[in-house]
Image 1 (cartoon, chains in turn brown, red, yellow):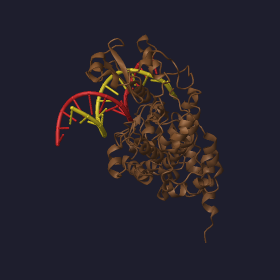
Image 2: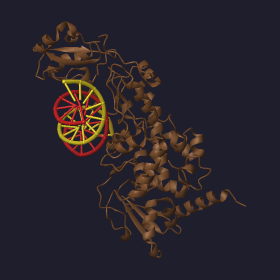
Image 3: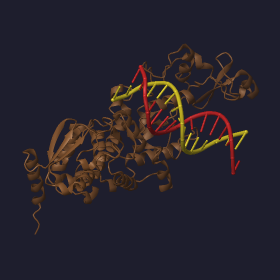
Image 4: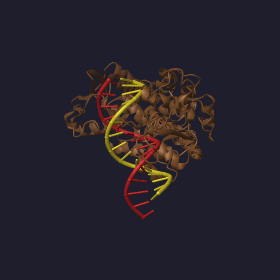
Amino acid sequence: MEISSHQSQLLQQLNEQRRQDVFCDCSILVEGKVFKAHRNVLFASSGYFKMLLSQNSKETSQPTTATFQAFSPDTFTVILDFVYSGKLSLTGQNVIEVMSAASFLQMTDVISVCKTFIKSSLDISEKEKDRYFSLSDKDANSNGIERSSFYSSGWQEEGGSPHSRLSPDQGTGVISGKSWNKYNYPPVSQRNTQQPLAKHEQRRDSIKKSKHLRLSQPSEIAHCKSSKRDARTSDSSSHVSQSEEQAQIDAEVESTVGFQYGQGSEVTSRSFPDDLPRMRFKCPYCTHVVKRKADLKRHLRCHTGERPYPCQACGKRFSRLDHLSSHFRTIHQACKLICRKCKRHVTDLTGQVVQEGTRRYRLCNECLAEVGIDSLPIDLEAEQHLMSPSDGDKDSRWHLSEDENRSYVEIVEDGSADLVIQQVDDSEEEEEKEIKPNIR
DNA sequence: CTGGGGAAGGGGCCC
DNA sequence: CGGGCCCCTTCCCCA
């Protein structure tokens, strides 16, 4: 006979003991703040603690002290609360740090949840972000992870069965069971093409069909150095499935043994690595470590496939604003003062802007004469009109500000019929077209 | 088949 | 913390 409430009650009791510092035999120091906990609970919850404590198992009579500087006390509070309650209080603000810490501590369940949290947030927010893209930078900067209450309340609400989340052996199945179903976030293993990653792939395929464009390569999504080749070889369509991805991450977590932050630290000295730079952020998808959270955020897009920056001229989407900017200047603004044919330097006097579809480039007068001036659509209006494609977006960042570049801006914003958003066979793209995503 | 050029995309880092 | 620049690598196209 099994009493179902036993596990949850046991966990509650342990949590109560932790709060009252009863039988706590482990102190964790995080940036000066001391957390009390039980070794056996930590052992069962974290691969990192498991490794650490197993090496110290001979000295069980003495209390263990561990020190962390790889994440903040707030982050560790979230982790520890999860360990003792099964409730993970994720918010848009803390999810990256929690994921980073979970990766460090080898808590694969937490990583999985964070991953899904981010992906779901990005997925849902993408449309919102596109819709408000032109309204304010703040909106775009929220990056779609700011819907904290939904997730955290969800997890806190779902406190009925905190049991069994402490067992690493149970993998993601338990943690992603009822919770995800209840809140419409399917388990990792069940996620399919509806996920952002797959959506991105679909979009890419459809964009590729566009006749006017020479677009992204199959390696797009897995362009991160560490995973690119694996991704390409693991699937003929270059798409790493969720399960493969999860397996990859799991394998990675298994193999890294949590030493990215401090190789060769004295684990046996009952102290966690603390000779590392403060607050480094490790990517849970690969071994990449960055110094700034913002850089990790940016890096994560190469895993999630998020491309929040659409080119208004051709519809191609970019993961980074500077890449979009670069693309736009190069492809649509004829920004390079170089003759495309003879590669010589040209100016407004010695050359002309030539337009082919949404693509613009420069030819020197000599090459123009050679090619035949009638055979190419010369952008004569380039320096005449100044019509913003986004209904007079005065805050357009495409202004290059220098006198030299004035004409190029006009070229872009001349509102000529050739400047159209590409129609591609993709529902998302349709939607984007409808809401007129802006180049910011 | 191969090498060069262009474009995309990732990382570091400054402002 | 976001924007943006620079540098680098990778990939594709084309001669």
